[in-house]
Image (cartoon, rainbow, N blue to C red; front, side, top):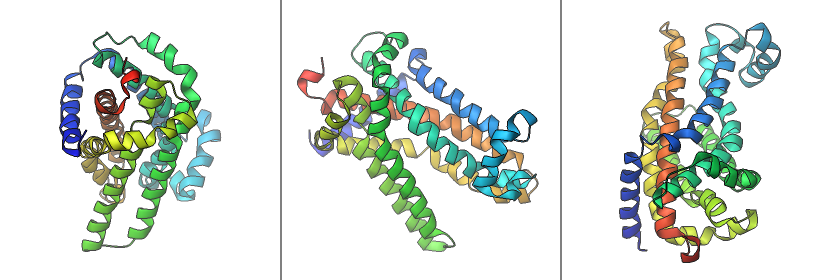
Length: 280
């Protein structure tokens, strides 16, 4: 499939996934992930409660310093603290639940009713493989984000804007390189080595579509990321709690974006990336 055909297929995949946004069974993996992420956010917000302080307060101190244990400085640190905790959640629970979502979407795209229990029964034995095949992307994405942050620290003007755009572009490319691995594990039944061996095929048949899907998924998050990044300003203006609400909204939008990206990637996989014998 040519790059132009892949781009067209990605557009169709986005449209068809948007039309499935109201299909309840398809949301179950993402609601489960949202429950875990919500519990993490609430745990951070209530770290001073006696029944949580013994476990969470040392993590807050280690992650953001002694000042973060006090109001309102805690809210300056909250976005960074939640982001770091969420990296672990996404790398573990998120990786497995993405595989569950792939199985449900594949059933829907093939014309059968998504069955969450049956899909989970098929995916659960592949949980470790799902975590390990997505681990390189999660590690590289963290390293890229941290590296760009360090390079742009203290910068302003055109350097900051160009550097930020370059970082976003690199993140989209990185995501496209690893986008179809969950589908390869779940729908082809491959192990870790077999999944990585299939990567060149996913690049040839789905890289350009992956770029479109990744860019489309990134756009809704950019305004929220910018707002959450203004935690210092919100604290100085006397509305530190607004940081928590924005972080929660970022969580919800992230779930919708994950739904869109996984549904679109699964459809592109079935339409272009999969070998003929794997499509049945």
